[in-house]
Length: 273
Image (cartoon, rainbow, N blue to C red):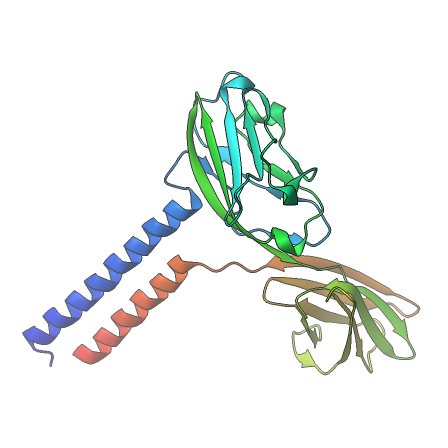
């Protein structure tokens, strides 16, 4: 039987954890810009190296600017002195733009009237990874949102069926991924995987599963800490029908705090009993 002191002690611990989780949530919302009128649909995007990436930033206000000249937008990257992109007085102002981004960035003036200041970043490289801040000032409101851009290389998986073996190939992966095979029921199967690294550190992945049965479906998952390619391949006899989709990882401090709160509550209940 728990004493009054034990009950008070555990109650205080639970309250401290709950308040801590609330503080972390407020800090997270402040970091992502959700306490201001400027927001982003993705504050932790993962860009495919060599491809273009749209960094989301928009004004979340009922009153939108009436004219594009009413809007000024500044994109900045932590660690750089010059801006990534600057738009003011109805036109780009790129005289002081950081050399890393010259000729590689674009805003869309037609979208600015609707409060959309998303930035198109062309031909993403590893040096583009980092923390970005989008700041909007307009007659309809203003504020800033921060985001962290991650870079990776990922490509869809293609399959071949020859001599009773199913082979999966993916030409571009970075960081180096893991490969997991499974049957239709999700049971893990043993495959043989090889990696070939090119001069810029990007891996070509070749993985073979054998033996396999005609008319059966197999799963192949290629993944690293940032992105996963999830594929289903059905052996049809002379060929393979396949489909692949990508998933991206994202950490949540709120989920971590909630888990900590639940764990602490369970420990206190156990302690009191």
